[in-house]
Picture (cartoon, rainbow, N blue to C red):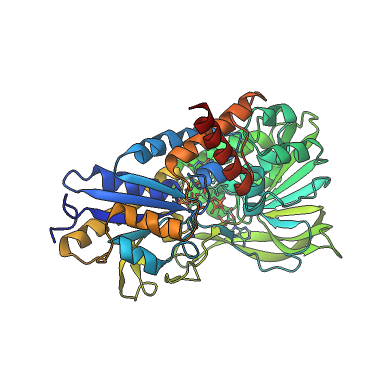
Length: 475
Ligand SMILES: Cc1cc2nc3c(=O)[nH]c(=O)nc-3n(C[C@H](O)[C@H](O)[C@H](O)COP(=O)(O)OP(=O)(O)OC[C@H]3O[C@@H](n4cnc5c(N)ncnc54)[C@H](O)[C@@H]3O)c2cc1C
Ligand SMILES: NC(=O)c1ccc[n+]([C@@H]2O[C@H](COP(=O)([O-])OP(=O)(O)OC[C@H]3O[C@@H](n4cnc5c(N)ncnc54)[C@H](OP(=O)(O)O)[C@@H]3O)[C@@H](O)[C@H]2O)c1
């Protein structure tokens, strides 16, 4: 057998997941000049692009244009897309070993971190992950119901997801009309009764995770005023020292400037208010059978042994009446069958992308690689995934050199297609996806929107079959 990665023996790689990290791994493999590669990408949904479709806020359309880059990667001869195929159920690791030299897990982090406080599971308390999936028409979340007749809502956490969730609730109908928000979410938000959104950060303004454009946007809403009480931007000694130190990150300086400007801005009487609170942690979500209030504790800041500014509870409590709570304190990975998992971080244990049997101390699992959020945890913007995937591909290519990979028994390209057909799995190709894409864009255009998303897998597959039948009929 010729060397792996040559015409006679192409390097065959399965990528699981079609979000940014999966596409950047494919792109880097395609860039290797002296390597003949065959890439098959598996995605559990019929639609590609992961959180770019199912996470990025509908009112941020420019960010989604990155999918053009991914579509070019998908057009490459070396690349095939198998949508509607789930790793772990439709195809298992042992199956992949028959057809590929290696697998790259790019499955992201689909679950949420818990707060572990009383009342967390009361009706009306939801993880932001669910609300985000719901308004973005992710088929897993389309049937959820949110109590949008709530007048007051608490959003816990001050990261960019908290900003997205707050903005979507505070947007006017006219603002949402221009977006690709799920049609049922748009309808539900039209009748919402939301008047006050409390955004709760456990540390101070100088430690907020949100970025400058996102906090600026909250001050530019058609129907919502942003309220920052002057005492919220009255900084403690540690924050003041940090902001004048040479360690300071310019994003933090600018965030504080923006928040100070808000503190000086009188409310203009818009129908909704976004109330920013810092140095508070939730201790209990209160209610008999549904959310009625949130109890918070005032925090103070201290510098820990690693020099990080952390929050510490005082004995000052406050209860804010709210009828709904969104917990936006971070995403979390879920384990895959037959793949090691490091529960503490919710990631696949790895060393620079090579999967290990155990976190840090484990042995390399030959043939298995990992990229993106499931590799490093749920942090970083779309672009962060590019160098992360390049690192993993570099390690994979080192293993190509040493031959430390799987030895597939059926390395012909059609073998895996035959496997899926034999299992009656209706795999969606990239060309199929492009038909679905075109249908969504056309449906949206009829309503003056960028697209109207399908929200059910079955409906998507039926519309696709119908379209294909109509093409045959007109032939
Ligand atoms: C709400 C939200 C908004 C964001 N907005 C922005 C933004 O505006 N700008 C920005 O730069 N970054 C944004 N980000 C960050 C960005 O989306 C992430 O950095 C990026 O999507 C992570 O990529 P990934 O490939 O690791 O995971 P994902 O994008 O989550 O992709 C994982 C894919 O794997 C698939 N999958 C999972 N399990 C299986 C399985 N068993 N079999 C087959 N397929 C599977 C999933 O369906 C999914 O398509 C946002 C993140 C969130 C949560
Ligand atoms: N527009 C965009 O570019 C965009 C949009 C959405 C998401 N993203 C990116 O996606 C990634 C994930 O975003 P994210 O908002 O989910 O995560 P994040 O940036 O890590 O923010 C999580 C927030 O939750 C807080 N938190 C964590 N545990 C808590 C607890 N027990 N109690 C109270 N608060 C708690 C954190 O506070 P501490 O800081 O004190 O830990 C932080 O404010 C980020 O890198 C983000 O930038 C980007």
